[in-house]
Amino acid sequence: MKELFTDAQIADFLRRSYFVVDGLWFIMAEQERGFDEAMDLDEAVWGVMSKVQARRAKEVLRIELFNLNLHLKDMTSKSSLRVTRLRSSCEPARGTKS
Image 1 (cartoon, rainbow, N blue to C red):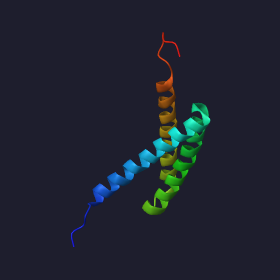
Image 2 (image 1 turned 120 degrees about the vertical axis):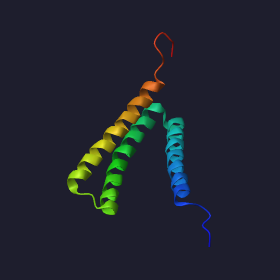
Image 3 (image 1 turned 135 degrees about the horizontal axis):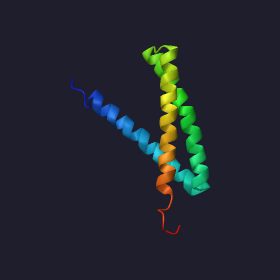
């Protein structure tokens, strides 16, 4: 029996869905609680998520503890970079009124 979707198509669908959910919950949180509180929630979620992902990767890929710590630090710094970029992109340009 022929498969309807390839593994790559399924992986792409799930990855895109993951990003859509992340964006939608942020937008809804911002509408309900304001930008600053939505950012605080986003930072908290990604702080926990990186730890969950690292733990799961260790289980699935049997990563040694040393490599897991490096991976966790990398994921945490990337989530911090994402927040910093988002904040700076939301600030008014110099010379403009907010």
